[in-house]
Amino acid sequence: MADFRALKITNDNDGVRRSVETLPIESLPDHDVLIRVKYSSLNYKDCLSATGNKGVTRTFPHVPGIDAAGEVVESRDGAWKAGDQVIVTGYDLGMNTWGGFGEYIRVPANWIVACPEGLSLLDAMTLGTAGLTAGLSVQKLLASGVKPEDGAIAVSGATGGVGCIAVALLAKLGFDVSAISGKPDAEAMLTELGAKAILDRSALEPSPKPMLKELWGGAIDTVGGEALNTLIKSTKAGGSVTACGMVAGLGFEASVFPFILRGVNLLGVDSVEIPLKAKAEIWQLFANEWSLSLPESAIQIKSLDELSDVIDAMLSGHNTGRVVVKHADA
Ligand SMILES: NC(=O)c1ccc[n+]([C@@H]2O[C@H](COP(=O)([O-])OP(=O)(O)OC[C@H]3O[C@@H](n4cnc5c(N)ncnc54)[C@H](OP(=O)(O)O)[C@@H]3O)[C@@H](O)[C@H]2O)c1
Image 1 (spheres, rainbow, N blue to C red):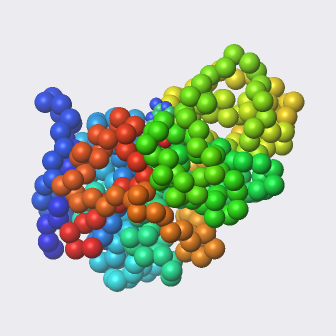
Image 2 (tube, rainbow, N blue to C red):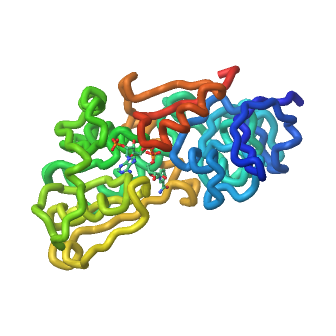
């Protein structure tokens, strides 16, 4: 079988290095399904892996890429056959199992979702783990009872991968969306995505007050830290706030008041280890009633050779929107 190209991360006594290399297919792990990856996408966790973060990737050399969409080449599991169009996100992909920044992956059969009719492989990776996470966040908000008439929904980190898809999806579902962003020059893109109001990130500065003015019917927080705390404190009675990210910090000092005096719900979101069925449900929604047409301004399509620069931009918080990785034969 052919060799394949991949973005390889080396982490040894000489430091952490990224290089695009041609690797033998035998270097992939011995799992049941071999997939020719057509598209991947860049998520924050890939950047951590690409900088040698041992909390994400313990063993190097490594090929990151927590997302992959492509075609099954061979399968030892009856659930899949050559030619099937499939999506793999999360579990151990791109963490300690070589991931979508290689032209091939070999994964367990139970990590794979069929790419639903109505969604192309490119569409799937335009959404990627970021879209799955945004979708799960919206699903949790809706399940908690939040409705458009409850008031505007705040989305933090709005120009990021999760944030921009959350803005577009909420707008499609009829919510007024207030996009909160640290990028003043992203106003046009956020408006195109469907944001009704755009607030500077300083709106989420920490406050010593245990509760703040009730502003939001709900919130989707993608940044964590004190920004999440400010969103909780300014959510209306009975509203809900989802938490999925940590780019702004891991912790915050909170009081119980928003929870016990306003009944605010804090909803955690994990898109990585959840059952495959829960992932498949979100992909089906995106293929049907949640179908999104994201503006071009929110999508960058990059080759493997262009990826390293975008990784640096994402790490410094300067990246905007979704980055799709297009492999050579896509
Ligand atoms: N729980 C899960 O299963 C799951 C799944 C996917 C992602 N995540 C996490 O969700 C977060 C967002 O992921 P992503 O892929 O959307 O990342 P991303 O594309 O890098 O977006 C993050 C956005 O957060 C904002 N930001 C960056 N640095 C910040 C800072 N220091 N303070 C406040 N805001 C900052 C920026 O948006 P603005 O400039 O617009 O403010 C940035 O674009 C990450 O922490 C990621 O690890 C979790």
